[in-house]
Length: 283
Image (cartoon, rainbow, N blue to C red; front, side):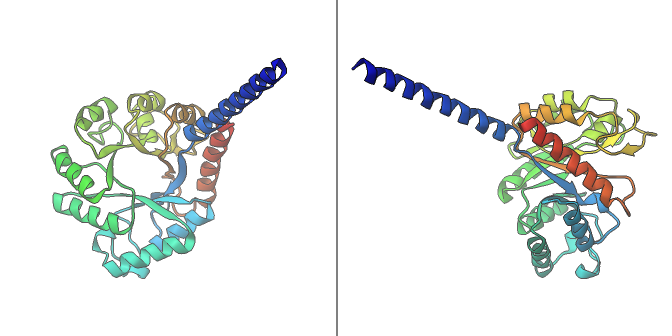
């Protein structure tokens, strides 16, 4: 009888050990489950089809479009707001053929009517969210649209003196009561504003939908130069550690604003760098 009890205790302990180990691995997986991608603005001089081709070359599965892109001759040289339903389906087919998901779109809307059009087109493109810098007085209206279309809005920030949303404390204050609006954190513009991106990520925990990953040579909103994510003043190892701490599950887009006509290798290097840190920290 004693022998049976001892065997039973040992078996229970082994099962508990396996369960804890499994939970630890699961927590690590969850906390590192953000998705790396590329903002098509990195190839802003190219047509939609050509920019998707570039994204495919660098190994991006997820992309973010932008509303003021000249879509090219495949789409009669129109912009996003002017697309017909047939052209939207053609765009969806291009994405499917390349096995790329356009998750989001930067929407440069100036009026409520344009916002409604972007939400309608966004739903037909099967987006997960829109990105933009709307007028503050339109936020309640946009929150309503976001709920109606089941398509969230992520408020983007440019640098100080370039955007009303540069300060995360201000952004937090206007997010109160907005059920369908969060944040697209542009880390490069925070650095240009002489702000610590990691501190700002901490402030916005729970509200971050996506991130624009880029880097700068110095904290200067007017004169600094863009550089690769692994070369500037932002330490992306610390950024990714903070994302892991927050169990962030959103999207981190490389957005290269330098040599947009010939930057394939630079974008690939940046994307691979983030993937490498993600893999290392997830171990």
